[in-house]
Length: 174
Image (cartoon, rainbow, N blue to C red; front, side, top):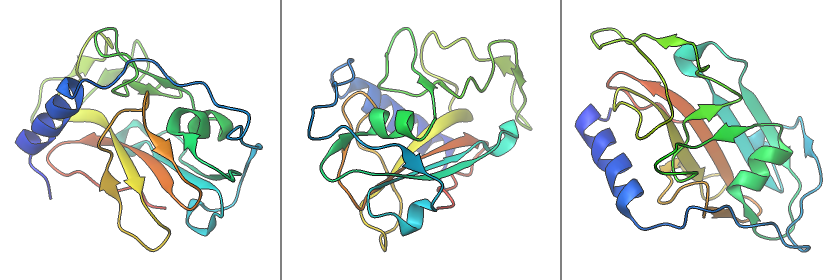
């Protein structure tokens, strides 16, 4: 279990790490084929897992064909997952996934103030999209050490997004 303080610390370190704010364009060698519905854990390419948590969205578990390194943002695109960053931090944080939380959606977390996500800056420490990386099929999920704008994945790795609320930080299910 991770505390909200650790979550804020992680998000702050990530935001202040000086990562580039632009998404690298895929190269000819890294342009992936379309994603398949295969489970991310059984993937020879790059696995993609999305868990909407309390947002009640339909989760994603897909495999993106990749024979060389691929940008995490490209893997998500190929799996049919759209992301939006924030005005202040760009794509180094994830503000919305497949338009959730919606621009007019009130997010409620027990014991915390409800809010509507504006995507202007950092999300609250008690309700945010956590970005995860699984370095190998048999490895444990780890917090990503950089944002979508710079994160590169190798075949056999997975990327996960989990909408995290409260004091628990669950890992992706795939």
